[in-house]
Image (cartoon, rainbow, N blue to C red; front, side, top):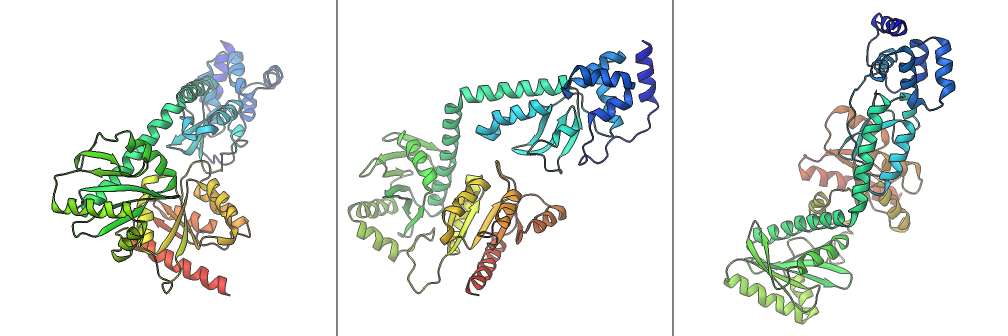
Length: 443
């Protein structure tokens, strides 16, 4: 009891401000040294080289709980303190989850996540966080007892094991949700132009959809190869059956000349629908007629062929992990005469840039927050490589505030555009950056 009273007297008379600069990340050893006698400090360190246990051992010596000792240690180091640690969902990081779990256990720390974005850490010893590759000096760091951190990590590991055991089912569910979203986009576009159906077609490596508008014009658009295979599997599961969609009700699905050529029909039979079927049958019978129809009636999605006199297309690489946003952005950029390629994150973007050094994009558009490699990390990697340092970069973000813009410009981003801004602003920036890149190449 005497030791406990002495310990509590020390922390009671401390007048230190909780908080401070978390970027410096002080060591737990400093707090232990200040809170217990030197002889006890030597005994604690000598009995265990595992810093995660130091709080438990020191608390046992002075006769207080681990929670009380770690709270006093946090105050001594001017760090914030947490009794309870939230369980981080590491399954968001896919195949990297298990590796991240091992690193966090070794450091005695847990992540604080905002979606797949790491916004902070909770650790027994703040100094151990500095050794984690995901700590960049900007995230908040607070302290907690090892029992609370270990409990959170145990639950996180159970989530990883469950995810791995059901990975195929989760992936199937993810692809199905993606296909449902793509179908809603395609059907919504067709309905907005008065169509009563649409065709999904393949021609070699190319995949597209097309429909006939209420004016009798053929409209068409491309389907990304990464999505097409899953989309065909999803739609063919309803072949010769009825698919339901909230915007049009029941949809009849049938094959037209091949397993990957499908026709979707909805609504009542009208003259416009009959015309659409006639045009579709002609397109099936003759590729030449299909090309002529597309050339005579420019598609709504601006996928018509460009004549030699037209200016060269602006090649753009879009780096974003949101498939729906990519789809919208693709349609908008193609209407502006851009040739668009995609990458899901910064690592894939770097790989694609290295694979096409002779035909690099004129502009790179990247999201700020992405898994594996964020937009900021992608910019650093590009600016550090002489092959890519000259490519203009336009960064998209949903974050607002001067700090975000200043940080982006300091990294070397040419333009920062909010996702909520008018799309015409984005297109104007792309045209300006492409012209600047062209002038630089000519020089």
